[in-house]
Image 1 (cartoon, rainbow, N blue to C red):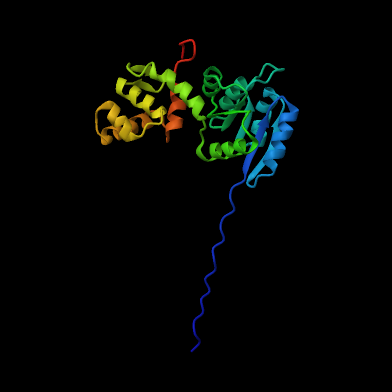
Image 2: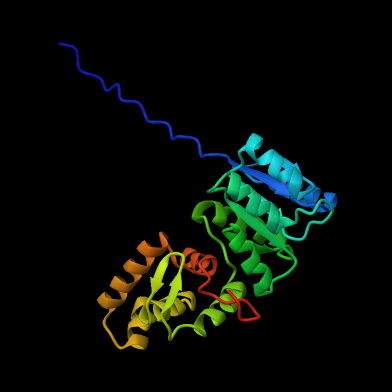
Length: 238
């Protein structure tokens, strides 16, 4: 009798999905530098670039990028990064746009997020940090650097003791406080101590908030809070 021999083969790993990136900036030199930088990264591919917001709006439907790196301050055709972002989101909801800017004040951050961007990044970052941030954004779907988050949350704190009516429904006083503590980076245990309750109660509040905002993490919750007008701008308006 012949001895049975194993015929099992190793299952090949599925190739990692290539991240398709589109660059939008009116400075050709900056686009060239960024394109050269990203082309050296495994798993990244720059599939197209635009030198204006109007061109970006036209190309995005054709190229179908996974992520758009969008300059906020473009000039020339009336389509700056904020307006281009809003138009792209109107035409293709769910498009992942990471705003690039030399500005870090909360006014520009809020304009970008309300237009539909889910991330905001400084152009002044060292090259490798910028690449890392792009990968984090692609994986998590949101990105707000700590200094930017702190500025936004400082404005949320001003409304943490009031119930607020939003496009997402009514946020109670307790939910506003939880959201503010959430944005500060406090743990569930720390939030429980602030509220004088147990951790289970905090988790219940978070579950309600996450379901109401349709989010999966803290950063996304703060972004939705900005979009819903819960975080006021520098002049006190939503």
